[in-house]
Image 1 (cartoon, one colour):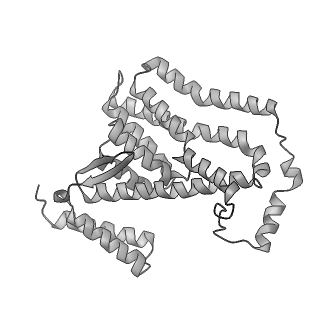
Image 2 (cartoon, one colour):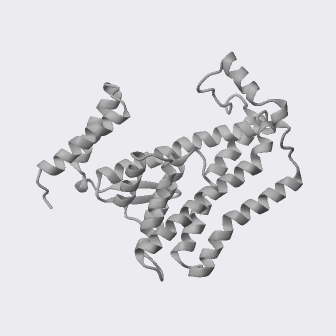
Image 3 (spheres, one colour):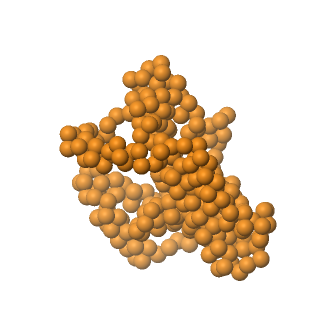
Length: 291
């Protein structure tokens, strides 16, 4: 999808450049331009000169650092083990990560739950909720995914040891490529900023990422509100089909309260989270469970 959006933007910018021109969300100012020009000087731009020698050297070091530890884990535990599955999956995730954690976590959640079976839907929701309410990058929820997946399938290790090892594996597979892309592409950034075709491709990718984030929001909401959510396939389309008899009325009420607090009273994220948390805790403690 991301590749398709990039190709549409690339060729579309040549036909209708105005349509694929990215908007300046925060505007610009003379002061901002002065700051940017002060930081990006000719001396800074020429400090690292792009060359094929540098490109291949950085690529070799980066790829060796990325895959070396992962291949070692695969050799020790087998290339059919859960550790190698996670190495491959999270490495693929790191390659196609566009738009930040919210975009890629839709992909992670669906694959980890529906394809690999490392987690159940409720557990994935718990992980996302935990990541939202704790300091640190949201993408760090992958460590939670890795731990639970290996805890359930520990291979020759104890569940705790397997979970800890998988936490290191998925964190390495997620973050190591970032340094490769940064060091590899940094010298070319200034040269590409004025490329209209590339700008059009990135604009289209940004639009696609918004759709991916919306997909995560819908998946998150449905699995919060309903205990059972199925799927219906219409050709290439995949539609979620919730079982309406499993609707959680308390979750729906809390969602409505949160929406009213945010959009009607502009309460703010932290106070809204505190309010709904207190209401949820009060419900659990005061209302007897039917189960």
